[in-house]
Amino acid sequence: MYLPSATESAVEKENTTNKEVHRKNKEKQKRDNCMATVDQKVTIDCPWSIYSTIIALTFCIPFNAKHSLLSAGKRKYVQVCVQNLSELCFQLSDNSLKNTADCTDLQLVPLNPESQQVIYSKQSIFFVWELKWTKELPISLQCLFSVSFCPATSEEQSLTLKPFTYEFQVENFFTLYHVKTEIFPPLGAEYCKTGSLCSLEVSITRLVDLSEVDRDEALTESD
Image (cartoon, rainbow, N blue to C red; front, side, top):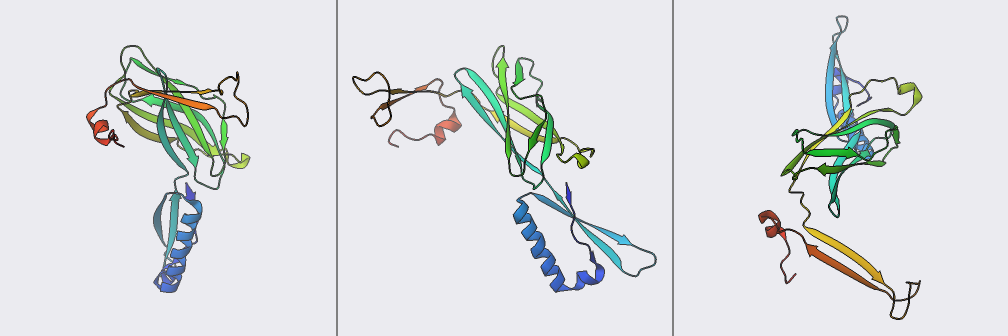
């Protein structure tokens, strides 16, 4: 996305004071927007002028994405979080997650609404897919997330923008531990009540052996 900025001529470019003010304003704008930016400059030469006009262009990345792997018993889910870093509101549609490794034994079942969603400024939206496999889970999962977006304002919805994409890889996503918790009422009581001291029981069962990398990073028994 392009955010307009003030132009500067060749004469103004030589003025160190203006350059310092322009730099501070741009740095302040970056801090306020908290967006990753790419700066470019375009030089325009006119035949009827001896000076060149330099236009500064700042392209901002409107979204930030991150992924996580969730487990519930023998079921596994891939979650993608999309955060709106800009001051604008966008309309999201046509979200998808594809396995680029072409593994026929693995399916990614979407659990997201098919309708369009509005993501407001500084807001995060989560997308979830359930992993379903027929034989064995692959060692690694190559994923490509894609979602179409456009400004939420009605007068700008006609803009044609390329979908936002996010590529990531998940490795060694085997369930290592099964965690079960249960709260018990006090002795002689049937239910847990407010103000009463109840006991919490946590059971952690190791399902598979740790890999060499996980074993090196695991805590020792004394810890």
